[in-house]
Length: 255
Image: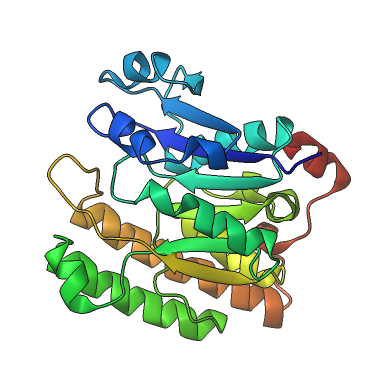
């Protein structure tokens, strides 16, 4: 039986970009697309209903991390062997999805991120705000040192996983906010998975979603706190639930 590839899009007020994001996706490379709407107040649902996707709707806003949790549980329930999380804001080039999956299928990586930062000139010409560029580079540098990795960026909204990654990592314990992504990557390192990245073009524009400076600052502090919790778990005999193996009952709930 062939491997099943599911692309998930955690959407919130993505009416301006959802259709454009999916238009770039090679449908022959994926078996199913899941859009999970997190109680949008725009036309996201109406647009998704006319597209060839499986639509899930939250009746109340669960947050960015909460939306991903729903997506991952549903992808596992539907038998996905490979799962791609793609922000529906058109910042990431969906044409690169098959290439990310190829690295997973070859066993080179267990988790692949889309890397928007190859050179400073390319990134800034793609209209990433300078303050976001330098914050991304600085935080990524720290994270690579602390985690022993060499990723181009840790803050990507394009991620591909093997099924085993989602079955192993207790992501249901993570935050429902933006720090979910950082927690997930630190967990992936903790559980011994192989991380890598593929280059994707930079696309920033007025209609693309982006968190403001205050929330970005909170996110950065929460990310560093996650590393502190990880180091305490590893070296100070402090048991942090984020890095404890899930019980059989918990694994069954996420599958």
